[in-house]
Amino acid sequence: MDDRIKVFERAKELLLDHDMMGFANLWAVDGTMEFPFAPAGRPRLLEGREAVREYVRDYADHIDLRAVAHQVIHRTEDPEVLIVEFSMDAVAVSSGRPLRPSYIAVITVRDGEIASYRDYWNPLMLSEVSFGAEEDRTNG
Image 1 (cartoon, rainbow, N blue to C red):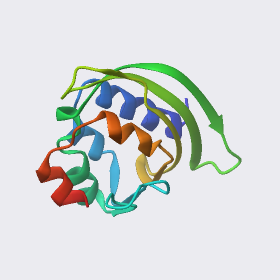
Image 2: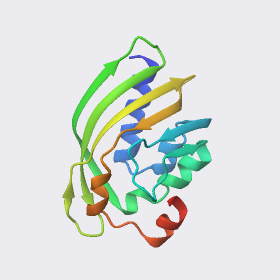
Image 3: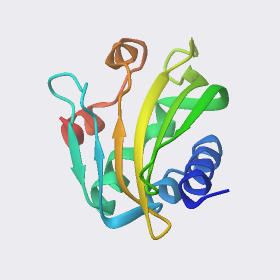
Image 4: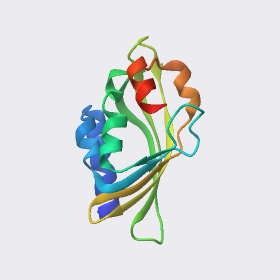
């Protein structure tokens, strides 16, 4: 298994364990996380591990990720880049309502760390999840 896939598999494991700080620690100190489809008021670019940490800190308080429902991994010709299509079985913590968020992630792994993670998620999911005022203030 190559480094790219090892890092992605570890990221999924940490998300399912609700270990958001462990997930953020996968980033390089200067790594980025981008959300090209983020709606107004939500961040489009996080620069650095600390920004990723702050962004994901309370994620599990809002979305309880339970299992990977579907996954397709696309290896690219670039030995650092991986494209992954996946969806997760989850529950909106505030309502108890089941969710199945879907993602396409373009991940660049350098020296065993995430250098870049472009997350093409569906922002319509936000209507199902209640984020607290503190997160809104922090991220938007």
